[in-house]
Length: 286
Length: 292
Image (cartoon, rainbow over all chains, first blue to last red; front, top):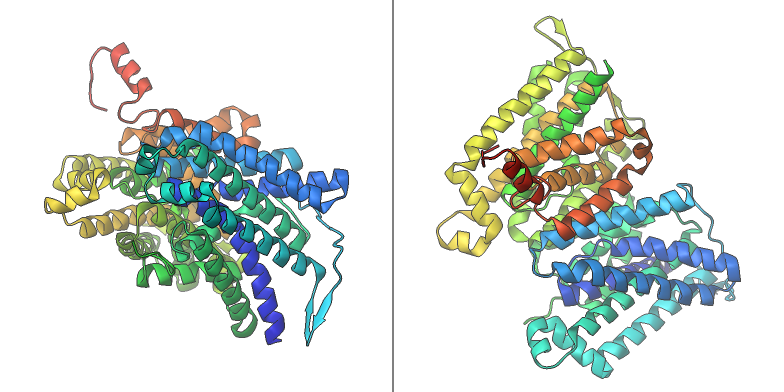
């Protein structure tokens, strides 16, 4: 029972990590809380579902959805967010909320409001570990998450782009003065951020075997809670915070039988942490 | 009769937009879960009148008080976090409040609650009574806001909106003013919720969800944050459009979302806010720059 709950929490947590990673990257560079990232998550799920229906290959559907949603993110930052950088923080925030609502309602009008099945044949069999039954889909989710974060870690820590990325995250104007092409970097940032959200959307679709237009509602605020917990725009703190929330939700829901739905638990944790440690659990000291 | 129903609906949203404007427009603190307080007011009155048998007027007042107390707590949270995190907190509060209404049997669960029609001084409420009550409140709130705008309190809020540190440095008690702004704003939302609940005679948790918050926000932002006329005109325009163009009804959220994005991109001060092209044109057209 404990092991089963643990693995379950780990899977849920890694889905959260992917969902929050995109918004966390965007926040790290632009200091914008991009709620529309949860819209990208729904777009990614639908795009992946469409591509999977056409090709029958989950790999192509992952890559296709990531690229298409990434391009969408690129267009968004170019046309909406960059021109708003000089406004007060509430302006891009309201923009992203409007965009989020717009995306959800567009999906509803195009695909209909009802839930669509997203059943995928996974080439990995179930594993029985001691007394925990781990399905192939769970293993796929864990592997893909680990793989993507490894790539992200490699980009940020090991490459020259990553150096520019970190410099821009610290101070955009000075990085620009030092010859960093910050515009290109922001574009890359949005491309990856929205791409990650798309992958997360597909995985949630597969995990619950369903996609629907407002599937981004709960992630919209939960991922932001995770970003706060993870220390504001630090992608790796975000991973830990996401796993933490996933495990807490699963254990509290499984053992204590909370009277609130599990989605409220993340939020109550957030309120507590905001009040106790407003700078986040894993904030860097700078 | 149909016109009365439309006027009541628009009136309710005018009240909500005006109250949101106190926190988001004057004090510059985002509240994207305003519908939660609207809902707290509605459910408070539903419980008080149907389960305990309180008089409508007392429950009207208590709805405002309860919503105001929760708003005060939110105000205390707002002191500790930056404005963008406050935005998330308010979204989260909205989801949690709706979840509590939906999952707890005390609030009728997913079936919702029936709310009795009030009788005050021997008069049973009908649509015209609600209409008069709502527009009486609107007038009172407008008078109150005009007082605020020219008072020390209003200027202090403007100071907080423009630059919190600067306001603090010249001796404005930022904490106190923020909490007061949140309390007043949510008090009004609670009262509106009470009127709404009795007028609808039936409420369910879905009425007070995130989309309602977005609707209120859209009305306030599109009209013009930080002004009195802005939220009123915004609520009127967005409330009347689906009535005139019936086909819009299905695309309502699409329209609100799109308008929010466009407004923020090109007219962040709203259609009738400060520095608005439309307002300037109208003022030029009619010759003199009179105050609204």
